Image 1 (tube, rainbow, N blue to C red):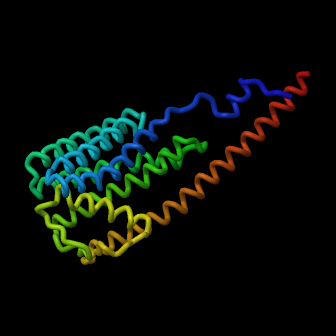
Image 2 (cartoon, rainbow, N blue to C red; image 1 turned 120 degrees about the horizontal axis):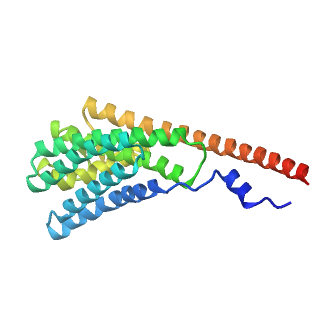
Image 3 (tube, rainbow, N blue to C red; image 1 turned 60 degrees about the horizontal axis):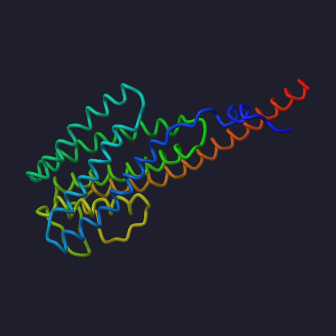
Length: 255
């Protein structure tokens, strides 16, 4: 027996939701791709254009997060009230570039990204079905957390330049706008994945504990996320099967 399209829509959950988190995910991947490119520009062209491009992509991600993270009016008002000062601070840093301004910009960035993480996590862990939008949102959480931690590491370096030691070369705060931010993104991602090459080493209790917490959260998040997505998929499949069975029995009675 062939089930009609109305039944299929009922089983599938109705109208397909917009894929807003896919755009944010693309923007976050672009940020990590731009990081090494900005450093190559710095090395080969002796220009701060690479740093400007990196901050431009970071600002783009902030805009995307403010626009796409939630459809609720209250969430958007709060997101924009946090995003606008952050964007203004980064724009000022590109002109002035003092370490104090970088610290303020990164602090505002961490606050905004933290709020965005709460919104996206709420969506992921309250969703009823596993869709590509749900998977994209889950990946966005992982990437947003990595970016937020990179900014946090940058703040720690501004407060204490000896927060990290480097087995290859040396990073100075005179290059903070382009050099260390790239390294911070790299170090945050390898710590999040517990890869840990050992070329960047936290040397103070604060940075050591921060890195340990990030590695722990990275592993726990994957474990919890996989369990959540699998549970959602199994529950949705069982619901669809029960719905299909009821519709089949109803059609048989009608005939």
